Image 1 (cartoon, rainbow, N blue to C red):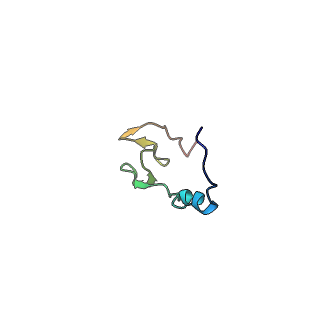
Image 2 (image 1 turned 135 degrees about the vertical axis):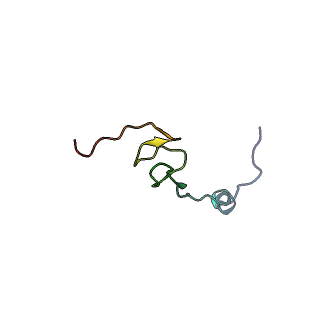
Image 3 (image 1 turned 90 degrees about the horizontal axis):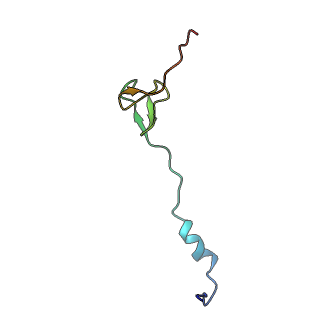
Length: 62
């Protein structure tokens, strides 16, 4: 059975996680309404994705 010969130090263990950083979401301009939206997602403002309306927007009057 594989058993470590000696204990690995905390600093050596923690070096694996030193370069992990959370990233801000990538924002792009919606080609339909020109609002900022996340890449490869439906636009929350107009409901369009890939030139097609995929989410129907409710009227503000009703």
